[in-house]
Amino acid sequence: MAKGWLFRSYNNVDKDPECDRFRTLYQKEHIKETDLAMLAGLNGATVKNLFGGKTRQPRHATFAKMATAMGYTYELTRELKPNYETEVPKARIEYKAHKEQLARKKKRAKGNGAKKG
Image (cartoon, rainbow, N blue to C red; front, side, top):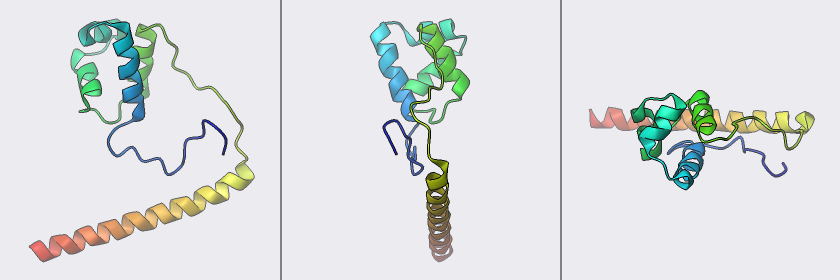
């Protein structure tokens, strides 16, 4: 697909990349985490955990509140219109492969667990 398309195979194992994006924006503002939290109407621990890596998948509302507190809007913008006729079949194939991979991983985990016990 074109620029801006988020790959279906995207896997945020560590954390949502938006966390890093927001940490960068926050650092440019030169304010304290507690001040950002207060401005956004969030608990200080929420912001600390998000920037510290403890929170891996924050809610959309958390990002929206922090963006607003720093004077940004957090919205969806359409850069392109996907060709659903070609993308849906590809997505089905990728999803099936993903499910098969998860099943193999689960089977290996069960096999390793049975050998240890």
